[in-house]
Structure formats: C-alpha cells, structure tokens
Length: 316
Image (cartoon, rainbow, N blue to C red):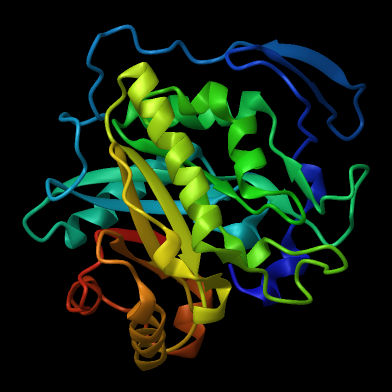
C-alpha cells in the first residue's frame, strides 16, 4: 500500500493483541456504536488431523501447479483494499471469476490477504504504531477461505514492532495448513520514525528469520508448503536481499507494488526485481481505483507478459 494511503488506516477496525500461548482462545471485546460492549470467546479453527495435510485444492507444493490470485484488505476500511468491501463470500466469488483470466495453463488458487496487523499514524498504548485484528475476525476470513478452497494470508504492517514478533503472535493460525504470511516492509519503521511520513524498510536477514520460523512450523506439524510474501514498492525498501535464503517447505514470493499507468508499473516491476534472489517467486499488485485513475488497468495478458511472469497476482 502506498504511503499516501496512510491516513486511510483506521484504528477502529482492529483491537490490540495480547500475549497468549499457541492454540489458545483469545477473548475479544467488541463495541458497536450505540450499544454496550460485549465480550466473546472465539474458538480457534481446528488443526488438521491428517498425517499429511494438503493444500486446499490438492497437493503439497504450490508451484508450478498453481497461480495464486487474491484480493487484499480489511473490513471497515475501504481504502485498504477490495477484500474489505461488501459481503465476504461475494468478494471471494468475484475473485475466482476474475482470476480465471490469469490462469494461463495453471490451476487457480484463490488468496484472501487479510491485513491483520494494521499500521497507524499514532503510537498507541504500546508505542508500536500498529494494532492487531481480533482472532474472531481472522477466523471468519479463514472460514471463508475454506468455503472456497482458498488460502488465507496474514498481512503484517508492523509499525515499530519486529516482523518476527508479529508473525509469532499468529502462530495459532499459522499451524493450519492453509494459512500463510504477507509482510509489508513499507510500514516497518525504526525508533523516531512515524509510518506514512517515511518509507519503512527491512533486510534480507529479517525476511530470512521469518522464513526459517515458518519452515520450522511446516516441519514440526507436517504441513504442506507455506506461502511467505513480501511486498516491495521500491528497491530501497528491502536491503541486502541476498541474505534471504532457501527454506524447505516455504514458497517465498516478492510482490511488486507501485501505482501508475501500465508503462510506469512495468518499469517499477523491472527495477525492483533487479535484486531478487533466484529462488524467490514473482508477484505483481494491481490497484483497482488508483491504477485506473492514472491509466487503463492492466489486462491479464499484459500482466502475464511480464518477465519474470508473476505467479501471484494481487488486487487491492
């Protein structure tokens, strides 16, 4: 998500997370305008019991069998992406229909990329400039993904928190066979910096730490291959990218952001991919409203003509 959209991030659509053991139930307090707050205990999704769990549409490895196609967003915040608009099942059905144009000889695997750690322009009680979505909302999106045989990706905008700490907070979901992670380093800022005023950044070593952690979960729980996406809008957002290594059981995808007319988006795609490690798969992000305002929205043919050809296409 571009820096210009920072003001669209709404704190009211999330609730601060608290420490809890993996697999625990988190108690969530919700408040609706004009009503008293209600406290509900949200049970976690049941873990897979089969010895060799598979991906939602079969198999244990993502590529080259599948092309991932997804929507991103968060409920209550239309400016964050299409996933947050209207009925969730209608959005996923729309996603599947639109995704058919992007298959190009592969099977389609729908992706719901839910922004679960949402960055803000104010520090909050813990000074991290981010809040976490309640487990009940994440579980509802996982249930929707399962109704459509799709994947759920937990998108993390960390603010001043560390990526690895944020990812570990969601371990009770990540032990599921159909849940992965999407990191947004544009929103990873340092002490003294405020999200939205500067581009955040990360390093290949920090990405590698998350990949290694996910690989441990895959091995420990005998899970199918897990997706790790990192979004990148500019080359400066990820430093020392060569430090991101290979990890068994983890498919790493770089999704190139960048708003603009098709020629500008293509140029950004090529520049940002100059430092991409060979084992990292290609991804590409389209913005329904912003891209269309600056030029025609790129077609499936134009997107799939990119080199490297994107294996994950995401709409915001």
